[in-house]
Structure formats: structure tokens, C-alpha cells
Image (tube, rainbow, N blue to C red; front, side, top):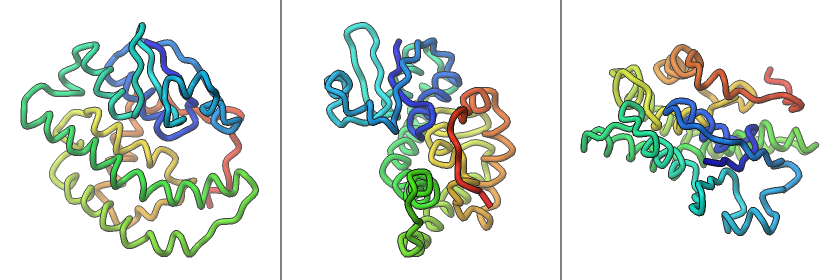
Length: 214
């Protein structure tokens, strides 16, 4: 199984952490997002969306990070990270879909304004963040309520749903996500997710100078 990605990007790190969690072996084909290598003809032939990550497994190719998480878990038969019980799996799938449709887009506003723009020499547009803040707190509140009665998103053990939800928060201090009022979400991220080896081992910041997190 070959992964084509840039470990510095959110969805690439998601896939790396997910593969570590489920125990899937892979070879890494590292691309450079900032050099737009994902727009090359060779890569677009794999993913017509020209977005990382992508997966190759023999003649089979796959894109969309959450689909890759599902595939990796199924490939190795990890029923802890991707349970086979009908209702638990439906719950995991629900959070995977919610992350891609709601949580990621909201977090990404902070990523762009507080991290990407400064890295590229631009300025943060505070009006974008002000407009997004009510929606962010609504979504973070949903997660906070869920985690009030559960250590992880779908029970006492981490699943690929946790990987997906955590990914847009992966360097939350630099993204300046307004998390302080969401105590259960902060607990989950800082005391559970960030203590796991599959998360620690996929922290990739070499040669990547981030803006001041202060």
C-alpha cells in the first residue's frame, strides 16, 4: 500500500495517523504541497481533484482521506479501530461524514487565516474568523457534548472517527482554534489523542516554520 501525501497537511496527517492506529503497513511517497506537486499530471491521473492524500494498492487507487481510513482498517481487519457491530460502525461512519462536511470546513477557516496566509506572507482577515466563530462554537459544542459521556468519540477506545475529528485540530495552538470553553473537547485532544503513539509518531514539522502561536 503506497500513500502519496505531504505529512504537513491536515488530511495527509490524518491518513498517516489512521494507518498507525489500525496497524496498516505502507510505503510513503512524499509530495510537496507548497510546490503544488499534487497538481502534476501524474498525480491528477490518480486523483482528478488534485488534492492529497491518495492511495495506491496494486492497480487500485483511492482518494478522499476518510475513505482511505476505512480501506486501511478493513484491509488489516482492525475491528477495534473500525468496529463491525452495525450500530457502532454506523456511528463511526456518521462522524467521518460529519468531519468532512462540517468540522473540517470550519476549522480550515482558522488554518487558512492564522497559519497558511502568514506562512505565505499574507495577512489574516479577521472578518472571516469573526463570521465563522458562531458556527465553530456550534460544532465544537456538539463534540463537547458527545465527549462529556465518552472518553473517545465512539466509546472507550479510539477509532478512525477520532483520527478524523482530531486531524483539523492537529496543531490547534498555531491555528488558534477558540477551544477554551469546550472543556471535554480540550481534554480529549490534549489528554487522550495527543498521548497516543499513533498521533505522536505522525507529528511532522521539520523544515516547516510556523507562525507565532502566541
